[in-house]
Length: 214
Image (cartoon, rainbow, N blue to C red):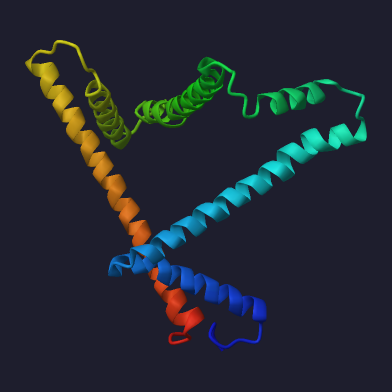
């Protein structure tokens, strides 16, 4: 029994949908751009609909609609907010600054959050990994020295607009090459993981859908 002919109607339909969408995405390699764009639009629409449902179910309904229905006169702030939203929707009389300022704050807050995550989640652990334990072994000394050297050189490569001598320029160039090597290794790992996904999709089509392989 396979996805072409099955006893479970829901499972068979899900297998067919997954197989058709997989073939639609792969059609890009044959030059069928319209089918691929249709798959992209479908993915974007499904993702947008999912986010809308999540925002309605997790934010608007429990935090706005339910409190207003449970106790309409208990808190006037949500009613004021709803009135302002209704007043400002489509209001062309507002100056451009009134609309651009909240967007600027949102972008700035998101950027600061991402930068803080990079520092706390990447830079500080990398610096901590370059430090030696209380009773280091010879291998720990070597690994710590190499890690500290690579971290320092890569950070030194980001110094721009500063006059450098020959040694500083060589260190900055070495740091940039190390950075490129790290990016290349990361891209290689990403390629291998994507190849694993490709093999999984091929196995799904040949096994679960067509039933050609066990």
